[in-house]
Length: 200
Image (cartoon, rainbow, N blue to C red; front, side, top):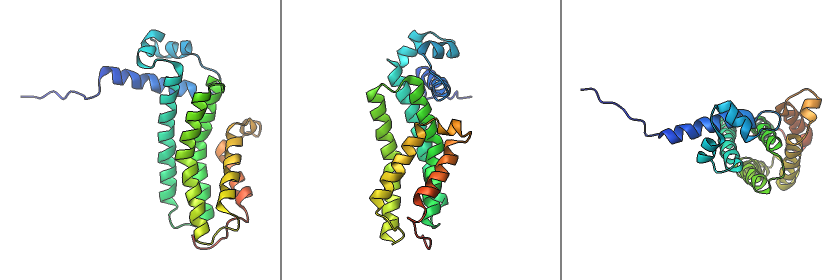
């Protein structure tokens, strides 16, 4: 007798995932996106979308949370790949891993309008938890090992400012390069001389 395996994921859960997938493609792309645009892309009514997500903000929060999951996986992989390497390489790889994905979140904020204070706070809190707290620990570790010529708090603030400015800038487009390329250059420029080469 054949047993039919029933998915534990409900139809509603699958539909919500389909909505988040489409919203990710649209919201993380260039330009402003309306819920009408999303409904058209999905071939469903806005009412169906709102049955799963009560408003655009909750949908965008789901999109951003998924993106932060990708950022977290990328920075963990960078941390693992550079374990035991020189601190400058570890910091650079960490920021490049985070930066490529963070640039997409900047696009999402532009697409939905920067005026939403709650959404901005959500993004800031997630960036702090996923990226900056880890970066601060990397700098503190370098300081404990005697590898920094500047206070780790200062390097953290400088790097934060550079990353945030690049993510909210048109500079990558104007210079025809990626945010990751500019982050690499920024890290090299900002941290040059601040990290002593030697054992990690």
